Image: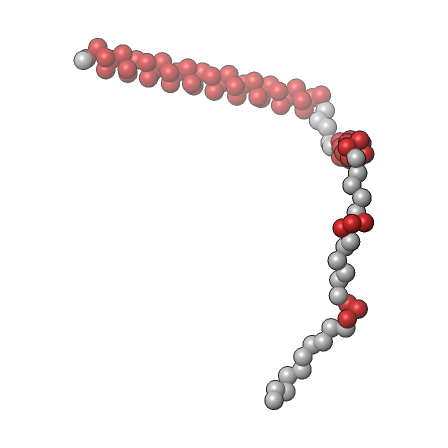
Amino acid sequence: MSTEKKKVRPANTRKAKPDKSRKKKDGLGKRSARWFREMKSELKKVVWPTRKQLVNNSVIVFVVMIISGVVIYAFDQVALLVVQTLISLG
């Protein structure tokens, strides 16, 4: 015989399973209305940028796009030159 004690849970501490038949399904209109209410409340929490920040970030994006375009164009021209050189050799 073991001297260990077993842990006994009282019967009233068991979790009751939710009754799925009692759960009422909302209609499409109610779900849509709730979604828009929740979206509105979330948008109130957003910290919107100031005009100065928006202009600054937009300028940065345009400058990076122009630099990327120039780099891609330069790579394309070098690759074109290499391919034309290889073709002229053959």
